[in-house]
Image (cartoon, rainbow, N blue to C red; front, top):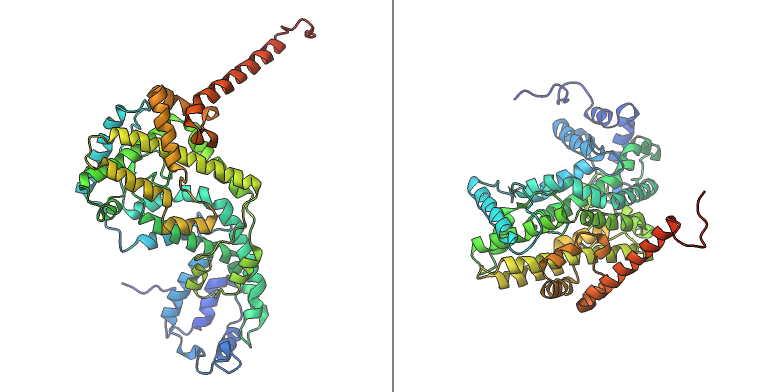
Length: 472
């Protein structure tokens, strides 16, 4: 392989430090001699940390290694195409893929055939227990990296409002505090060349952390809709390696586990297709919550003080286990309650429908309990995501929602149950989960009141009241 002529070598006569700064900052690069003097001062008692012998000898710079390191650092700090705005979304995707790399076998033809057969069979079994229509889509078997790619746009949609606020606040805090953290001997005016990098740093940190959280989720999710939202569109999909690892701790035949999970995946997608308003309202609740985000500025400033701009690990660690989002206000709380209710209703419906469809499976009852516990309690990956953006995508009232759908089905039949999903006005409330037997009466009363109001309005517009003035 031929060396890149653009990369300065040890004997090309160019100053490697100067060349590095020129490529990193262009015409506004800091003066290389000033940087070198500051580096030399870091090893003196008055230098970095006041630790003699821990300094940096610029004469020992390896130009090739330095060039490679700074190219990586520059790419991290300067968003590329597709990273518009204050958040480095390209870096977020790269971090997610990195999180699953090394433990992500490609999906072979045999595994793809198994998934395809399970999803096809799931469609047939669901036809007998629900009046929702088939998805009509070809099933997908994804690796973890393929799941990351397929869901990247949806993660951006879910997290962008929070990410934008956090990245801007973090960048401002770092930019404000960094001058006081410079080693003795380094001229603060050198920060002028670092300005673009500092403005991107908050987005870099959030991108790294979000990518790590999504990548961790990518090791746990079993299907495309496993978190309760259609993150990968309306294609039924499963992640065979995760299904296999999940099944390792269960005394359940692989084919039964695969079919049970396929039933849940297809059932969710059929519901989203049956009720177009549902996906809209789920994301609207997320957006309403995000619109009122308030940040813990003191916490952000404390975290910014610990950041080493030259150490990506220190930047990524800023968000670990921490949430810089203030407690939600009343409007946000209402949005979160609505989101939680909707997710519980979806998961409760899926639970009931799949339980009916999966009766031929010997392990159906055990799988139902296992999956419901997993779904309701979440896991470390979901907790990390919740700390990062303030959203918990779990159905806390799953059992009450399932009991509601069981009651509705037993009392009114499948057609009535699916009819509830045709309009958001018929959506069950928290009161209905507490009192399923009263839902039909409350719904009838509400619809009668709406019909009466419509009749009154129609009569008024038609001039049907004797004492009402008519339009000339």
